[in-house]
Amino acid sequence: MQDLPEKENILLAVAKFLGQEVRPHVTDPRLSFRLLVAAHLCGVVAQECASEEEADAAELGRLAALLEGVPPSAHGRAGRAAIAAANVQLAASLRDGAVGSDPGSPAWEHVMKTLTEKLAVSSARFDTRKEIES
Image 1 (cartoon, rainbow, N blue to C red):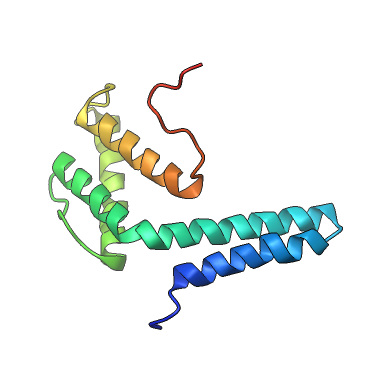
Image 2 (tube, rainbow, N blue to C red):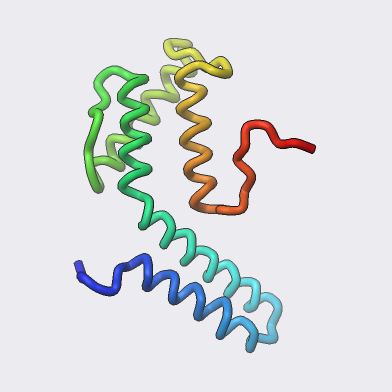
């Protein structure tokens, strides 16, 4: 692991380079689109890196409150593995009816919060308000 620059900054620099410096010089529309996608993906990964630990801790904490046997905290790969296993357990519990899934239930609120957090990272402009006014 390197100290500086941080990986988030490197990815943001690559995204900016691809999107602002390289893409304007590309005349092939297909390649230009692929550059745009690559730049966006670099930005998404940078955002994920910046918020990953906090988001994982929050998700795991919510899952631990919902399900038996889920560790309330874990970090890094162990945390991501615990989240994946708990999500499998949650899905099975929802299918079996062991955990309620009605709007407003703890499971519903957890899923909505998790989706909102993930959408905020992958698409910062996505409107995540519960009620969107027309």
